Length: 82
Image (tube, rainbow, N blue to C red):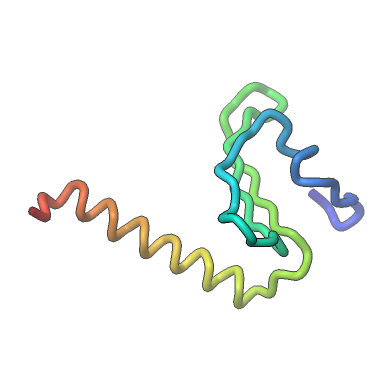
């Protein structure tokens, strides 16, 4: 993606991909999207996108918290934490 690319609706960009809905009464104002894709040669690859309006601090904070929560869950699942 280059600076000249124009943003499109997330549903248009991710046609056919489904996610769980937001809780009732919540309104989406920004997104961080990591998408596993097949590239033009058919190889599995990753694409990372964000919406306008997210600061680098928010992005880092959200990714750090999500990473820490996932790490905790994986340690519990594989650590025999009975």
